Length: 368
Image (cartoon, rainbow, N blue to C red; front, top):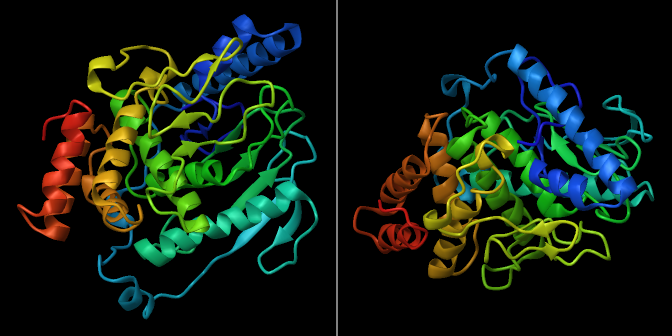
């Protein structure tokens, strides 16, 4: 994860949407103002990393403490489930303290502040996706309140989940325009789902899987809210958050990893789409935001094979796999194998769903 500077809870990592490699490029290529801001954020990131090391290991929720979920039709599950959507949006007033001033709570009318109302609605869309199609009551499965803060710090160019709540900066208006886009909201809140599903250690391939799951469900939240099929979707994570002068369309593309941006200041999107181009690096916690392009692309390919809606068969398999994984240090091969096992459990050995899933993983260089 990008180590943001906000103070997390004990032993809890902070997951940011803007990866550190983008900040490193900005520090080298940006104008004086941009480079200074990027260096300052990188220094704060490093401080947060050291503090996390001092706390030693990451805290992850034991799988045995979580509620169990029956993978049956939504109508049958919802008949016995109670909807516990509870949102609270705060105004950070461009200060560092969290959560800030409460400005809209569950059931309140719109405030007129675009960012406040956007994240309020966005959290509702994410909750609806998990509740309706995955029978999950909020991030922890137990009705956890969805706390969010907008206008975090002055010109802050990032958004993050700190283990307890979401926070969104306003961007600098040049490199980044906004962070309250729905796939970003879905991405960051889905880090909470990973956290409360046993966790994936945020380093190397397991960290890239953590990022990939968040991307998968972030784009799925946007598709669900817009009523998009897998063919209708642009498959762009963070579309519209780049500034007007930046040559790019988003932070990441699941359809074509490595093509989201190519800019004189930001550089070239480094994500690979195949294991042949896997980046072995010590940067970015072992390339968690970079190499996540590989499992992202596998999910995209699988959705193209099956058609329809991503939250149907593909999403059910991915969610089922996360609940069954029980391996916080999982490799890409481990995860691919678990998705195939989940497909077998849900659709049967030798089913079309299983065979097409094996093919999707093979196309990104992972043989299962």
